[in-house]
Image 1 (tube, one colour):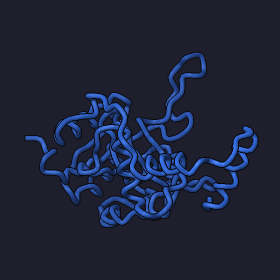
Image 2 (tube, one colour):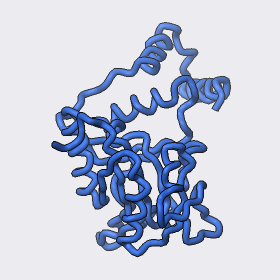
Image 3 (cartoon, rainbow, N blue to C red):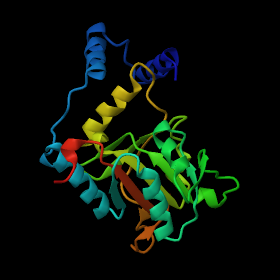
Image 4 (spheres, rainbow, N blue to C red):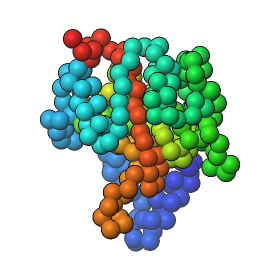
Length: 235
């Protein structure tokens, strides 16, 4: 949305509420809060040193029914292939165009297609999607994925199995830290159209209070964490 279109929408809302133009001093206060947001109360679970945050992120993700694997840098392709083989899944995978996933093409036993998931005519490659997370939130074991040409949103929703690669250096404390990471990633560019916060596989308990996996998205989530932070590596 352009700035003029946004202003037109806001002006229309103010007019419907019978409120006049926004006073300049109020606009200045709001602009400051948007450009330099201050964190709210940060819970203790979102605090800690790097090793603590990474360990907490993995534990919380597993508590939410995700599976996890820690690998050295450069081993993520082999890790994905091992996971697929261990679960009798097809070696054909749809992989986001993120350059940080380029190494998967050289992994043995993988047939990589660089694209989003196909919702029109799905193939074996659409059963498994591989993405790279912008951040992992230690507080809840949540993955933050920002949509864009290098991270198509369809990979987060359509495959039966979602594999997400995240770097230890990108694990942060809580949701506020995740938004800070998103703002720094966007820089002067507009924020992404969609941000997915993924905590475990898709599930619902709406039908007779029986937990069903895969209700609105992938029924299995596997996280490959790259140990690229010396401060977070286990002793």
